[in-house]
Length: 141
Image 1 (cartoon, rainbow, N blue to C red):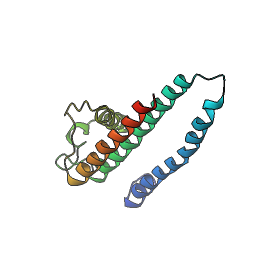
Image 2 (tube, rainbow, N blue to C red):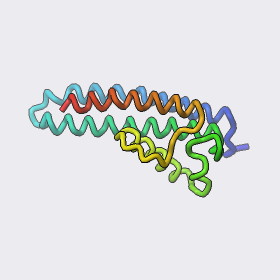
Image 3 (spheres, one colour):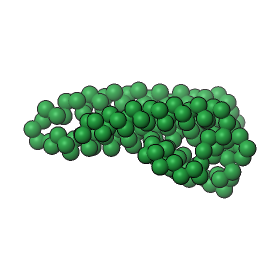
Image 4 (cartoon, helix red, strand yellow):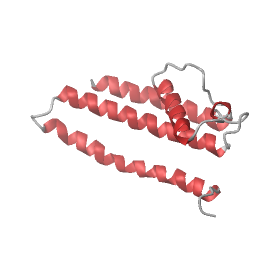
């Protein structure tokens, strides 16, 4: 039936994440801009770093949301389980984005944490890559 999600549509939704590969165009755009005399190099660097942080946290929020959705938001087997029983899709995304930003900024309040091994592996990878991205952002200023 139309409108019902099955395993195929869920996997196709994950494949759509690969559209993010087109973001290399943004990189090319930001590599050309410093040669313009009308744009402040510091302002450009800050906008580029903020853009990178927003895209990065959004991407990982979507990945963690997808992992929780694959577990059917199970209260015992997903990081996003017990808190989202009464939330709509947008509020679930905001919760995922909240987790991503809190983890990216190394605040880590502890109100949401990975539960199963897949979530823990992705969490560790995300934290390690955050160190690299944060170092690049600070080093570029």
